[in-house]
Image (cartoon, rainbow, N blue to C red; front, side, top):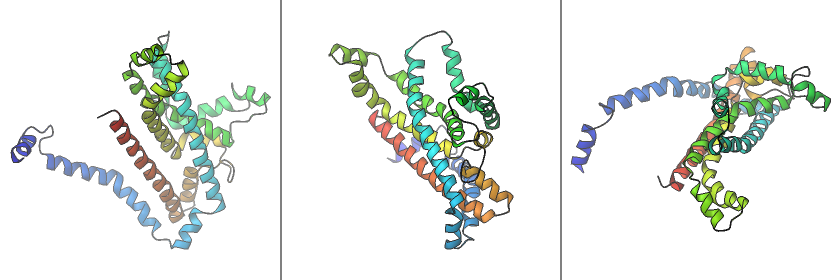
Length: 280
C-alpha cells in the first residue's frame, strides 16, 4: 500500500499535487464561492418576514411561473427534437450534413443579445415568420410565447451534444439483431435503443432546463418585459438592483441559486447513473 502511494505520487500527471490542489481551491473560491457567498450574506440582512415578502410577492411569483414554466416546456421540446436532430446527424449522410452539425452549436457561439434581437425581428408581427403566424392569430414577440421560443433556441445544443456521442457509440448491429429476432421498428427503438439513450437524454434535458433558468440576454428583447405577464425572474433581479433594492435582489437570486444547485445535484446523479449503466 505504501509502495503504491509512493509510485502514484512519483508518476502523477500533475507534479506537486498539493500545490496544484491549493491553487485550484483558491481559484474556485475567488471566482465562484466568494461571489455566491456574498449573495447569501446580503440576504441574511433581511429578517424572515422581509425575506418571505421579497421572494413571494405577486410580481415575483408571476416571474417564477413564467421562468420555470417556460424553461420546463422548452427543455421538453428540446429533449424530443434534440434526440431527432442527433439521430439524423449520426445515422444519415446527406449534402450539407457538416453545415447542419455546425449550426447546432450556433447558440453557443452567438452572443445572447444578438440572438434576442434576431428572434425578435423574425417573430415580430412584421417579421419573416411572425407575419405568417399573425394570419393564424398567433403573436410571438413580446408575449410569454416569445420567452418559450428564446429558451428553446438556446437549449437545443445541450441535448444534441449530450445524446450524439452515445448514438455514435451505439452500433447498428443491435438494431439488425433486433430485426432478425422479429422486432418491429418501434419495438427496436423503445426496448433496445431508447433505454441506452435515456441517461444521456435526461442529462441533456436537465442541462437545457438549468441553462434556461438563468437566461437573460436572448429573452429580454423578445419577451416584452411586462410585469405579471412576460417578466422573467433574472430581469426582475436587474430591476431591483436598478432601484437600489440590493437585499431584495439578492433574496430572489438566492432562490434561483438554490434551484440551480438542485439541478446541478440532479445532473451529477444522472451522470453517475449513466456511468454505472455503461459499466464504467
